[in-house]
Image: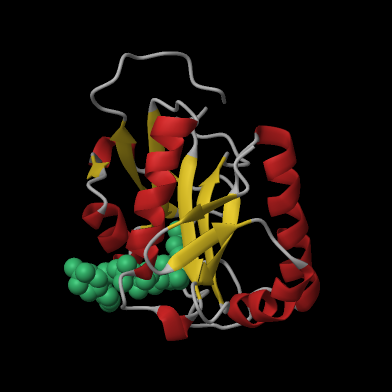
Length: 188
Ligand SMILES: CC(C)(COP(=O)(O)OP(=O)(O)OC[C@H]1O[C@@H](n2cnc3c(N)ncnc32)[C@H](O)[C@@H]1OP(=O)(O)O)[C@@H](O)C(=O)NCCC(=O)NCCS
């Protein structure tokens, strides 16, 4: 199993006990969680860290801790995961990201995600990676566009985990397919 990936400015690696405090602070920040149903409590943040590690064990890939090279600070997470709900585009592997606000606007999410996509296509043998977010999440959609993912509005969907009328229920779906290699079964 891949334990870490490197980019110019980031190390994407498995989670450590020392990440817990910074991860709690990011997940508790209303700016970061604007397009999530709510900011996370300490217990919810800890539970998410455990779920991410369990996902690696179950699937052989997951959402990595994104550490800033040199300083060793935790910037957030970037990686691949299997969505935990049913939707028209499932089964699928999703690319996801979340960074603490002080790291935004430096191209770090795009840099980490580019490497995660390369990993997914070249090393995990995936044929397609999707990404989705609430319709109004312009920052996240911009990252999807910078990565070269494509959006077809007929793929957009209502998030089944959110009640009708919820401000985040409408989700946009972006896709990217592997190019230039023969198709073989994905490992999902
Ligand atoms: C989405 C997120 C990861 C982006 O991180 P980031 O490191 O700032 O992203 P990057 O710097 O790589 O790219 C951001 C791009 O969006 C642009 N951007 C920044 N603010 C923007 C805004 N309000 N509207 C549109 N584009 C915006 C930047 O200019 C940059 O584009 P450019 O390179 O063409 O100038 C970060 O904002 C975040 O963690 N948000 C909260 C969590 C979240 O919403 N995650 C996704 C949920 S699905």
